[in-house]
Length: 197
Picture 1: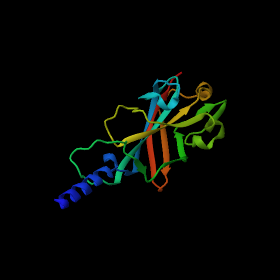
Picture 2: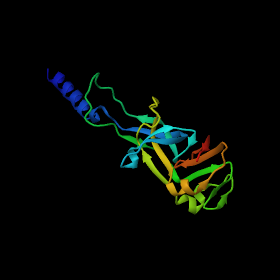
Picture 3: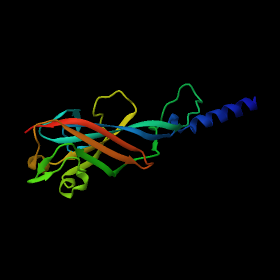
Picture 4: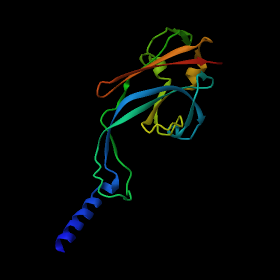
């Protein structure tokens, strides 16, 4: 009988130590989505804005970079059929997107403050333009996606000075975005957009 109590006690202890059924999960960013978006609902704190896809920029110029992740390690002892989580699962990223590697290029010329910006220049390397760009995280579900492997969104938003002083031809522009991760992965995506007055 003592042996049964000891085994039951050890079993219960293991269940309690099972982190409330939420062991940490190790993930890596293995791809990104790059999209042109417009602000659906602007909040006081821009990290909580809601966005929708667009291919035509009218009042704002906003891009979203969505991380695609894959689990590389997770501990699940499966000690019980049912358990009640006491905390949210911790996600540990084994890599990260490096903002200082961002590259954003348009395939056609445009004018900003009466200066022609040639095609295929990295806008993040032009100080006058880089100063017009805000980059921030947004954890709202931007695209109403059901893909559970799409999580964090980095928003690249151009301010009103850039919008008011930038002149674009009325044609389709190809926008190329490139970034790197801390484990030397390179992601390169292209989309097409138009600019309207």
